[in-house]
Image (cartoon, rainbow, N blue to C red):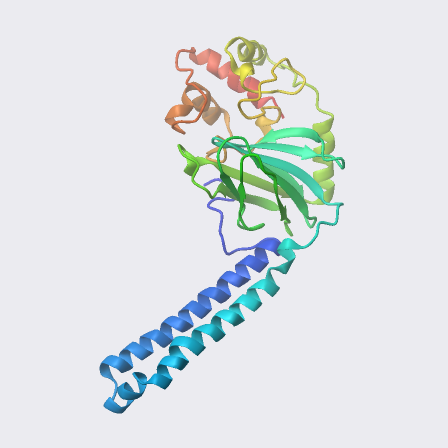
Length: 314
C-alpha cells in the first residue's frame, strides 16, 4: 500500500480538515439520533398501546414531530456548522506559501510560486509543504472540471476551466497525505491521485534550496547516458520537461524531480526501477486511456536505460 493511501476522510491533520471532520461527526450523531426517534415512533405506531397510538397520530404530535423538531434541529446544525467552518473563508494574510495546481487528464501539474506569484519550480503529482504553516493553492484546470481533495488537510474544491479557485491547506504534523480527484473527469478518473508531503520547516527549506539550485542531472553511468540520448530521440522530450536539458515539452508531467517522487502514474504506483520500466513500456496496461503511448517496440535494454536516466532526476 502506498504512503497516505487510502486517504482517510475522518482523520484530520490540519485545522481546516479538523473543522470539516468535527462537523461530519456531529452530523452523523444527529442523523443517528433522528433515526432513533423515527424508529421509536414507528414502533409505537405499530405496537404501542391504543392511547399512545392515538396521541401519536394527533395534530399536536404532527406539529411537534413533523414541523417544530426538524426546524429546531436543522437551524441549530446550520448555525453550528457556519460557526465551525467560518475559518474556511477567512481572508488571506498575504504571507502564506503559494503553489499552483492544475488538473490535467489525468494527472496534476504543480508550480511553486514566489511572492509575486510567479512560478519558480515545476513538478507533477506531488506537493511539498512545511509543517504548521498555511499554504494557499491556486487551483486551475487545463481541460475539464476536476476536483482537488486531500481529506486530511482540507475540504474539496472544484477546478474549473478558465477560472482560478483558491483553497488553503495546512499540515500540523509531518507525513505523507494522499489525495484524489473528486469530480468524475472521464477515462481513468479513479486513478488520478495526488500526494502532499509535509516536512519540518528546516527540512522543507533545505529541499527547496536544493531544488532551486539543481542543474541537469549528470549521466553518471554509460546506461544513464544512453537513456538521456533515448529520451530525446524516442520522442519523450516532446511531451515532458526536464530542467537544464533541451526537453521542454508541456503536454505531460514535468520530470525534473521524477526520481525523488514517491509515486508514478499520479499516485497509483510506488516509484522504483521495476514500476518505472513497466510504465515506460506500456502505461496503457496500467492506467488505460492515459495520454502516454506504449513503447512496447523498444528493446528491454533501452527501457532499462531510460528508467535509469529518469531515476537520476532528483
